[in-house]
Picture 1: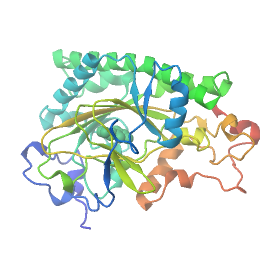
Picture 2: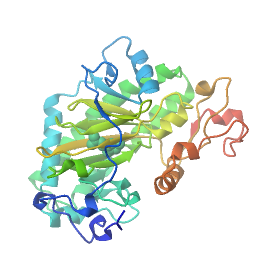
Picture 3: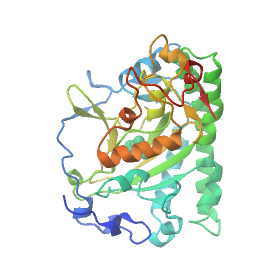
Picture 4: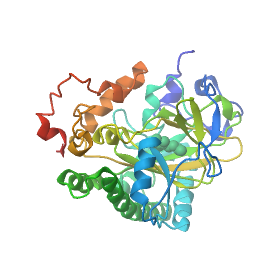
Length: 370
Ligand SMILES: O=C(O)CCC(=O)C(=O)O
Ligand SMILES: [Fe+2]
């Protein structure tokens, strides 16, 4: 593998003009992308159809449990977010990425910062660059953040912020509904630990918007590198263009997720909280020749320094499978895992004889506490 181009990975020094690219340069060429077969995960597929949960279904909690245990991903229906709003979100996102490089670069993510414009946050762990641009923002500081791009706070600024805030407001209602189902599925609906999870999660919302330009040679490159989401769970809104693929084992294969739906992904910290019952999924995004694609990953998790350990109800009479971690600590573990090619969840798992130094005995293990 050739040495990575530091320049093209550094949003402060360089900007890759996707619109002008007539081929995929070495810096953006990924090897081994098609080692495993690709299968269709659409509703018509029999074996590999990605599960669907309809929030209006009286048995939705059971469907959520099954999908979270067996897939770690499901398509969400009956969420009540008007498709007209989702179309406006998409249009406004397209308009941000269409701005001249010099304007976008005003918001470039600085080293060590989680928010800002540029390559997706996980890009720095990989030797090659992905065929995408991203922008990470939190609803709490959306207006201040976007002033970097639009210092005069004109009409485009107001339209973007208004639509993203409306999206956030409507998403919070969906988060509430889905959290009720998750807690019911886990049997902790009336339990203190469950209440704490719900109370703290909405404070941490981060929105990561992704823009995948058209690509002259899409098989040679990747839009977003293979990863699991690290928090509790993520909603993924995507445009009507396919690109998301889930990794499934036995046999190893990539399952193409149908475009257009709102998707829910279980994250690593939820796998820890549920003692491995709900599972996070490896996923990636590919690009295509004819259409640009947009997605919004709406990430939810605990406050950065809250201790997360397997819930008592999930451990039952058994042993905790994971040690206590905070999201902040887990990011460091994840960085090491990306760098060494290991699994972050494996690195925080406990063997039967291990003691959880931070767990402070059986009482603490089943809690999330700040
Ligand atoms: O664009 C996609 O389909 C995937 C996005 C994603 O996985 C993420 O931002 O975490
Ligand atoms: Fe993701």
